[in-house]
Length: 214
Image (cartoon, rainbow, N blue to C red; front, side):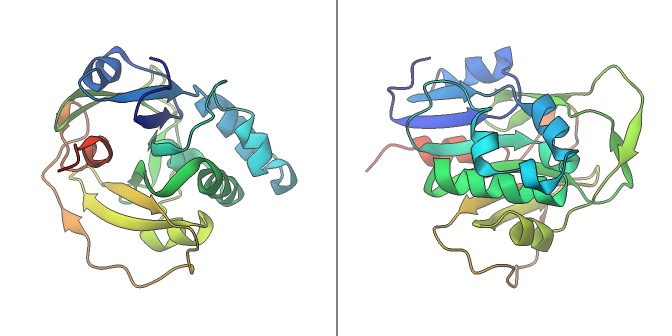
């Protein structure tokens, strides 16, 4: 899809057929960074290399328009605090003011799969996640809403849903000048399951950013 359409979405991971098929129903383009593995590698290095400019080099060529929404899926679980900070600075540069960032964060379990999963939009409220083949796990940082706002800079929690599997689903909003961590309202709860389930806000970023003007 060419990036000359009205809305621009950024997929930090790899594209899936389901997501591409779903997005055909919207006036948008999807820029695919396929940068999950490189972000994980950079996250293991010292904070001195984790600059927004370094991360910007991972973005797809031709992404020269402000981004309306970013899909992180479960990637934030695999990033260190310095990496989150660098990613937040990058988002403040490339995402338009009031743009959205979607993320899934493990808040209940102490471990997560060793590598990020792959996700596909299968409908208006259905997101399918596929785990990797390895059974290996790693420690989960269990970032709280306040952690995300503290480390990600100009991102604030717009809304959040607690899923049955212990994952917290977030829509984060990019603000021009975030004042840092703040009091966050009580979180909503959802009956969503993790793999092949109905999510209440997973695709809200698409819906909000592509709704037609009245």
